[in-house]
Image 1 (cartoon, helix red, strand yellow):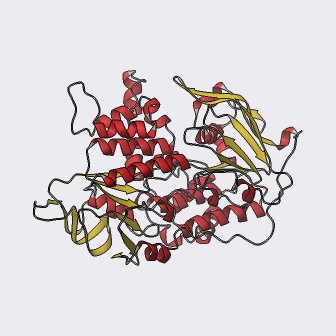
Image 2: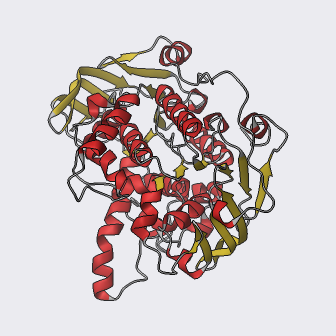
Image 3: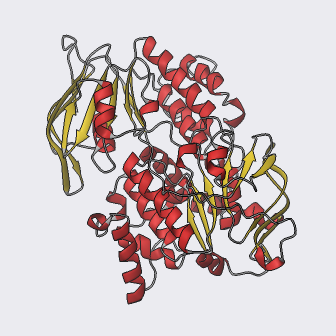
Length: 511
């Protein structure tokens, strides 16, 4: 990366740059200049090279050809899923050293993460003013000393924004910064970015959603067919990408909700009995009693930190506090001698945390095959019928062209699609989908939602579906659980007389 000179009149300049991801080259001979006062959005489908472009501009990846120049006096910072994944993975790798040294209370906190990138510190060692302002803006103070790994995906994203601000950047590269955030958090973050731009700073926003393009953005770079082009206008760019287009649902009424006041024991798949989850002095879930019956398909919604992902992790066996609570799956209490691996064969799971931790250097098809055992990685030779089943599913999701590529080499959205296939391949009794459409373009979001509906129509599927976007709910949902953020206080919403509860719930959830 070559520094610019004071007479350059640019913030960033790309001159005939070709991107590189290991042995693959993308966007050949791309030239692009960001000038003072310009604010850019970057649009394009999954796998087109948007994230690679952002990482190359930020200096995190080398280019295969050409020059990336940074105007003198300008500082860049990147907020992305890859950055979040790197921090999370490093924490996992440090666990062995912590256990060996007996330092079990030294997990990374947001406060320490922010401190890594400070460029200035006053005599008292306090945070830069911009970071302190953002902490107050996000109401993040209570989370500063919590373990990074115990944050929700949305809270992790806010922590990374704070870390980026600690470097006092003049240009923020934001790769899907609103993913995993509830409506209020998206609005507060957008308002903060607006203020950032109004103070003469610059933003490059990579997004798949038209509603996330910030007011005051002046230009759009569209990536399609292997090329990067400057759009004539934001409106024309959005139209060309199909962003924000609602998917078409199959005709006909939605499913009847499954409602039973006296379920028989063999129908109860998940049973929470007065469950309470705490981290230090913070209560995430407080005395939650709730059941999921065979054939029910639940949507769970609520603000960041309200306990949605905690519920998923308790069921999936990824939260050790499940053993200190009365959590029952398929009629057996957790910790009563049940086989965790047998449970994982009956449950399909997709979560942001799973994706952050799934870093095995195996092919994308092998990732799907690992779903037959619920393992992270493939540890046995799959049977031919399993290979045939996985191949059919990959083809149905239009992923066959990517199936032999190494999983870490795929884009964030492409990885998510293969993890969804992994969760579905075994046709599990219970499917847990936590923000499954995160990072997906409109076409792939529609494909995933349709796949869930088709699966529910052909199997007696039990389902939990978590999202902050009501338009992502599949039509097959029958019941809803709302968590209000005050210790996981819950309200069950089961619409027994309404043909399609999804249409009803869209009038309840803030858009």
